[in-house]
Image (cartoon, rainbow, N blue to C red; front, side):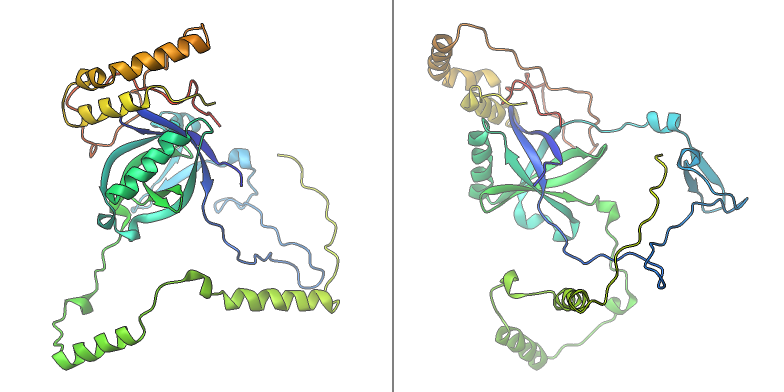
Length: 326
């Protein structure tokens, strides 16, 4: 698999560098439109509906047509003024019970792979989600667009599932559902009995796509029988980072204090001995001072629904000296 995004999961004062991989793939057999006589591919020209002339790519712009028939054309300069999200951080907003997230909100699924030196905090987040039976509601910028998503656990991996915004869900507004329906107890009992008689544990592997299998068999049969021809030759168209975790326990304790509205200094006191021991070990390992992690950028636009903390948080303890920028 190829990573499609690199960044870090940010929860509290802990950053976990991760790579994003598509968790699903479709196996549909795809077809091209071809000329029945010689198998040549069918191509379409981009033409203007006003003058009928063919239009090249460099002459095409984005346009919006209003309900009263007016067209607004957006230039590159207009688009550059928009607040485009380009951050590489998966920002945890809150942790909510799993059953409170309606599956209709889910869009696409991705696996998160931890950086080689961030396996421990990755496992810590994973086990915390399992132990509390909660999912993490996050915001992340994918393809220059901020989206809502959740982090949940599947086997040993953390899964990121992007979600639709609430106003993108249609209501089931059907007049038939408003009608009063009288259900007799005998009917309810019989329906429940039918459900119980067909009850089973869901095993996806036992279901197969019969249509796809038949289509593949049909194509293979034609290829084997010689009912095919070489694809016609056509002229080509003209060209138009990671580091080790530093004071993970301290960062977690400070995060808890901040979430509860307390002072971060109390958490620091609880781990003075561990911090001193870790500092001594690092000093003996290498004399060069550790590179200070940059403070978390505050330029990203936050959604109104996100609750602001009671006081400004200290700079994050980064898991990596440099976040991956791929």
